[in-house]
Image (tube, rainbow, N blue to C red; front, top):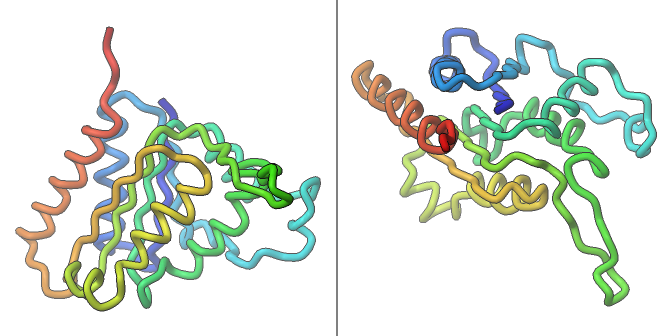
Length: 200
């Protein structure tokens, strides 16, 4: 299978980088083809310019590469920190520029004078690993867990990815090396569970 990993953390050596490296190693051990993108290291520009909005727009090579990989991916893994209960701006911009109408989703008539979205991605599963300093119970009880809504219902729901698994590792700022190793074990187990090689 072809698996796409998107990492959105600005600091090399972060725990997000460790998560992404664990994902890549687990997928390669399973024998999958891995497309890995560290958005900050690539200098990915998150701003969607007006020139890219048209369906037939000529896209920059890096954006075009991301699009071709994501539409061909059999699975997607997103790794990012929680910034103000949302993904970092670079990842929001990646979503704007890469998950394009006509490639990741499209709108079709709903039979009532309106339109409904139809997802076009072929990925059978999307995994989201995020870090935060707010405990998960606070995210849920106080804020309503906006990242869960964002990824499960808004992004991958619109693009028709049937399985969405998200794990929030928090609070990361007070976590010990032993806790982080245990979390990386959870990451590997989730990858192996969702992207196991099918045998006859």
